Image (cartoon, rainbow, N blue to C red; front, side, top):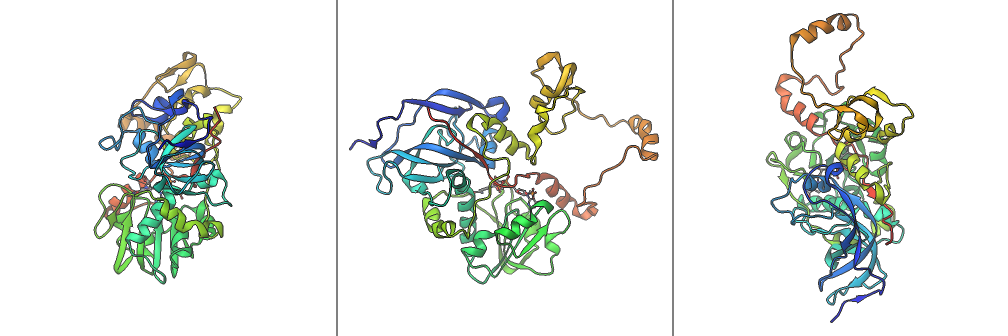
Length: 416
Ligand SMILES: NC(=O)c1ccc[n+]([C@@H]2O[C@H](COP(=O)([O-])OP(=O)(O)OC[C@H]3O[C@@H](n4cnc5c(N)ncnc54)[C@H](OP(=O)(O)O)[C@@H]3O)[C@@H](O)[C@H]2O)c1
């Protein structure tokens, strides 16, 4: 049986594509002539309205999962919200015109070639659900991968009503409102503590000031989203469970899993989403227009906070721009003609350098008078100093550098 469709589906569409692995600024290009994917019998074709980015998108673009990735070129994007414009012959749940959302990739580490950063994308009906009516497309796109991961992790720990949980780097809204947790504690940096409480946390722990493993109470479950399973195991009750979603060795008894995307979880959560108990959290910089997808990736990749994009609009240019955060492509736009930048592209006759520090004592000697007079000062992280025995924790703190406040959404995706 032929697929049912609207007449107006074009044969090609605009899509963001990369043909080699690397940073988004170097490899991600907008291609106006990418063939619209053919759908299989169990798939629908979606006119994308909003797509959201997740850390897996840039990790994949860096080549971290190349062993199991689909062959290049790739249209990135896992999370999608949009309208069904064509249905395969075996599709029973959806019809043309339905508003749907989901994570396109059933197996996160084996993603499809054709993702959601395009005008059209294809998905199996089993990874989709009808969009809750109260959510905008932007809000809906922000949810699937994150909320399904949270749900699967709680199921894997056999979480149930009356149990307590500590969530590292998350709010615990699902544990509280869907699973009936007796107590939810969650960690975040200072500026996000209020957000945690508003999402359901009974105890918001500022990880820049407190060590969660030194809390007076222990928890039935610790859910680690930041890669601190070695410390997480110290915060769990005897016989409790620790689950981590960050790849790398999990400290036993912590277990690591990789999400399996399914629309069933979204269907189960529909009443909680429609009732407003479980809420989407959008990053304040969102939504990014489709044309600014590279900027959206750069924000997620460099993990910068709000306001980071402003410097490119400064009226003034500078003789020297010193880039300590890996934004040399943008730094060169802030340098005077003939000044010192730090990019291999070298527009405006700038020179650019990449330097490694040489640790000469003579430099310290030169700086001694300035240090002694207090003109140049040392800045110590509020989390430190770590005792020698806590070296691993110090490294873990340094590595956990992600700072996004919520999901980074791309919207609207333009019509052809
Ligand atoms: N295994 C899977 O199936 C799976 C699924 C989804 C995600 N993941 C992985 O899980 C990780 C998190 O994903 P995400 O989407 O939540 O990332 P994200 O949107 O980039 O958020 C990271 C959050 O972690 C917080 N954070 C950073 N260091 C922290 C610390 N030491 N303690 C507490 N919070 C900290 C940041 O908040 P602050 O500004 O407060 O620091 C930020 O809000 C990523 O590595 C991702 O690849 C794995």
